[in-house]
Image 1 (spheres, helix red, strand yellow):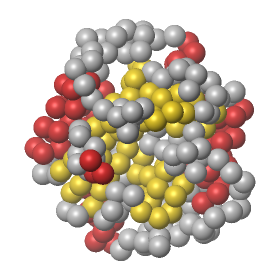
Image 2 (tube, rainbow, N blue to C red):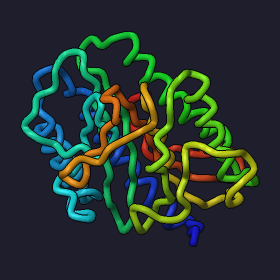
Image 3 (spheres, rainbow, N blue to C red):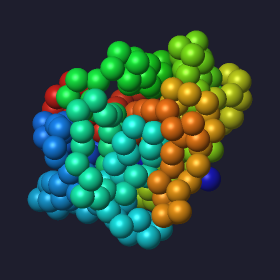
Image 4 (cartoon, rainbow, N blue to C red):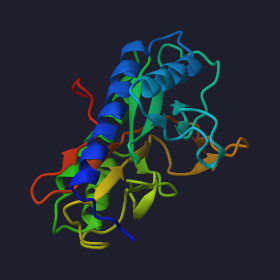
Length: 252
């Protein structure tokens, strides 16, 4: 069942979203060659707790960390380790915060030092696909209009969307209805209504769409080992334009 949030819930989700955005700002400042994924995780948890929230992911389904940190061919759900980031890599960082009974969830992909033009374009197209989908996130449109817009950008750029993992509704629960594929025909799916809160998150592969889940049960990689990028925000559907709830103080 898709939940419609009232004014009080929206206010709390806005605060949860701000915390996620601030954590993004912090991590973007410190991501550089030589920093370990575990240090990023520690910094994220420290800030989430300082801001009065709790990590949404830690312990969720047994996940052992505060953030998901996925490098190069890792698509999503990478478990932070002592591995140090290297020049030329890209890292996708997914952050969730639980505050006043509600979740915020957002992800970005960052360059480690100087990266190739191919990786830079992958990141750009992935972000662009999110924002094209966002244009369709209006009351009266169908959920499939978002999905179709995302897929159009990705396919026209020569990339592939991951189909096994999708965006989702969000609120009291981290994952709520509806599921939000990053592909499919327009005009399908539930009608969007003011008060819906959605986590829209294109996951885009440079090579084929085929993926593999590693033996740790979490980390998802591309089958061909080519890079993948991830971009996500929690948004609010309104009667007019959608509102991004997880933006930090700095512009993406």
